[in-house]
Image 1 (cartoon, rainbow, N blue to C red):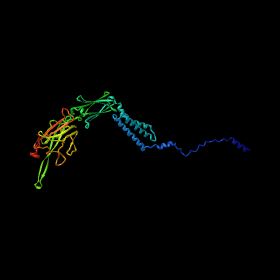
Image 2: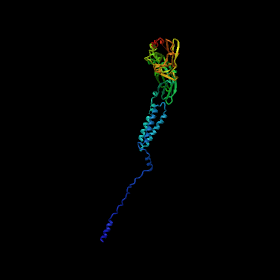
Image 3: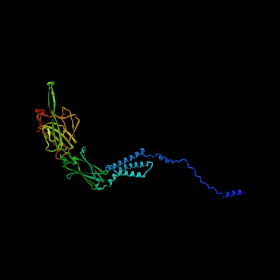
Image 4: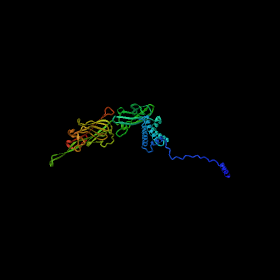
Length: 412
């Protein structure tokens, strides 16, 4: 009985057991990311991928090109520069977007630097004060068209240019600016009033270009003196005797004889002292090329050889354009030579020794011993005064019949 009571008491006193929540065991299987993210990750190039590298390089190359165009803003308008700059910026932005991690800070920095490089010069022009935005540049001479050219740049609509000498206006013209840029082309014949320099290189005539914009800005510059030495004022000639040796007969009975074959005639044209003249021995006082200034212009040169008043020979006409003279050679082909020094003139044959040097053969002009005048005639295209013809006469006594190759060729 007591045993039953004890069991009942124990059952009464016993507390119900707590129910514990059982957590599911962690799964060993990883959850896959969404399909769309996986595709994006797979298509994003990793750093160093050639696609992104080329895109970045292309972007900066285009940005630098835009900067160059911006610096030449007088020729390329702001719209063209801006379009090129935007293309470059677009390449850089796309490069940053194709990276695995998009950095808005890097994009902002890249865009800012790109805009500074590409559009900075245009912005600088825009903030330059109005009174300093005019430029008169690139004053040059075009020998082919015989024109003075120069450029006017600035932020205004039109400009009037003048060329003056000693305060006297010789030429004027007006041009409208296109993209802040205008090019003037002025024929030299419309304002030439004499050479800018003398034979020492001293400036004697100062030609001045003045430009006035429609907003009141002005600019003045002097044309480089060497551009406007256009008229030949002096010329001269010198001659060099050329001999040949002939042998007649054979063996011990043969004879050798040296005779005059002709003369090499040379000329010099340009600016030098008026006192320079021919000298004994066929020479000329300008042989050392001192105090001499060549004239690069347009003119013609011709040589005439006279004995007394009788014309014995006339050379082909030589046409000078800039620093080069051309003429029809012995073969019928065009020959050329520089006029900025002593220049060998056309002849009637070549020397016997080298067969290359063109000389005036004795039989083509020599008519017995006497005084021969080598007359050089220069016909200027640009000149002052009534005539553009400049003539020099240099005479020597040729006694080849009596003295043959021993002739001293003294002046006469």
